[in-house]
Length: 116
Image (cartoon, rainbow, N blue to C red; front, side, top):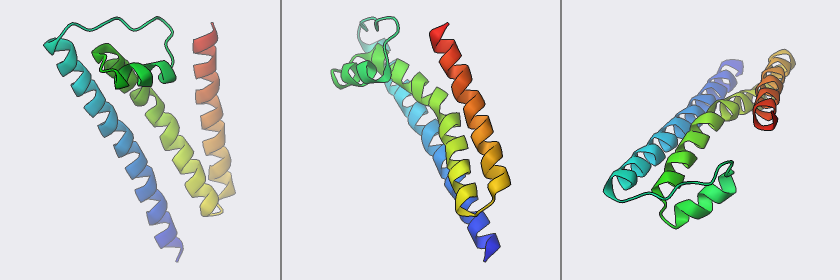
């Protein structure tokens, strides 16, 4: 049924967005608690997600906060990617192209922001 496929796609998009937002909120809350409980070491400028994950594993509260912010920034990208995959699965090539275009705009803006 076409309606059933559409519903599965919407649920998948909703789950991906919710998971990103809730995970980000959890990381931000844990980082804030850790920051308030004990002194937090500063995160090096320009630290990428890999560095943040390593510092998070060593219980650096500021790294947990930064990782939560990174996840919050990446969540819309994941949502658009989930939408593109869903549209492709439904064989809706027009909306797949639109989703890819939006994804390209977001990624090029992110690339410009990081390299300028």
